[in-house]
Length: 242
Image (cartoon, rainbow, N blue to C red; front, side):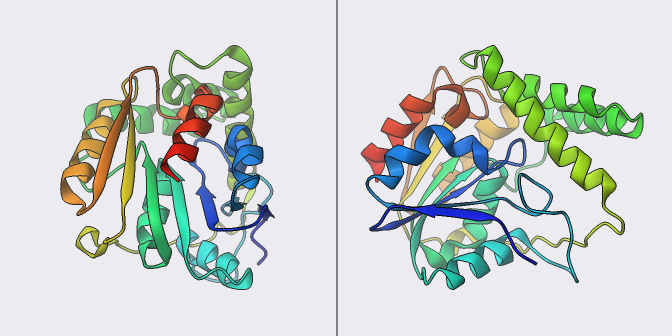
């Protein structure tokens, strides 16, 4: 199984791990600026972007990313995750020199807003309304700073992912290993969006309190996907931190 990835630039490795509300293309706004300073790598998980939704046996996204990095000869890297990508980053913390977690989830109980979103997405997909489910994602995950072109792009990313995943026969078996927050001993920048769902805002604050060397930055303009909403500001934030 070939996991699609891109690599550019030279120097310290920086790995960009996307949200499952998008794909690796969500980092387009940061790519060139980071590649001018670092060796930057981004991946598409199975069933997203350019990676097919297939497997010969049970798999994990963090295992796929670890395999890509091993193939590139990368032993340590800064891991930058967005949403679900934060969980992937935490599972790979053994490979991290630093972590950036943008709107992470956590082990906190899911709040009603997240449960309501999941139920509505399931309802639309079960009804065959892929377009409606894609539009629901764009409405939910993008804050008010996102323009109409960005909303169309996120909907298109989701529509493409849903198409691949719904067509899979048989559906691959995925597992998600647990991560140990007490074992994370590297610096961590946690980014929270003021317009994100309450569960993710609470999770960001929770992780900032749990991790040994964490800094919390709250973006008053941001929703769940700030890298897409205001790309230049997120680029500056990352460059300043890195």
